[in-house]
Image (tube, rainbow, N blue to C red; front, side, top):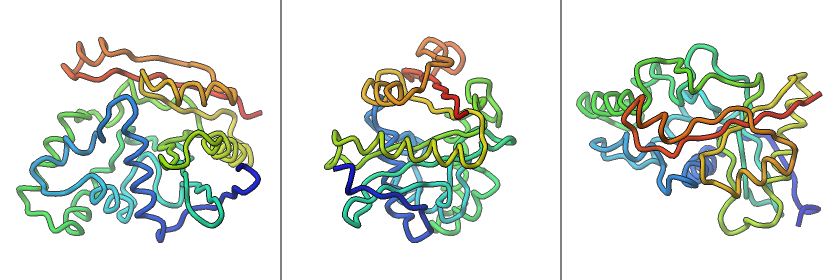
Length: 224
């Protein structure tokens, strides 16, 4: 199938598809999107919120223009974001854009406050926590292949294309992370040359944040 694949940069017209990609990428290892818990009390689905976040260009982990899309016979089947990490806020959302998102989603002030409180409970009020420090100048996020076409090498095709993009921009290393327990992603990353760099385990989050999370492992790859 790989000889039928092509890549292109995403545009704002792709936001509904990119929202699904972000949603799918958050499921392995957790079996649910982390936005769902944060959105309790807002009457908003995770997909609705992600679309609004992308429209507001409020994602610190990759906005629409950072995504590379894989197409098969003209249909979008996979995507991931590659970008220079935000040096001011390592968390997924730029809270400075929350009012814009709130207006877009027609939230009440109470809904906005509820969301902000839930967000800070999960991600803390420290915008640069130690466990989210970027480990490379080119970070790949939100890697996902649509469920109906998995197992055909599309993920590797996508990642190699993103690595070439990083090389073309003269970055020295690429970084990526996987939730502990997601062995499919781990195997894919290691098969194209990523090496484990740093791991945070469930015990770390239970002790530091009283948070039930399996942890994650950061991987790195030299682009030279």
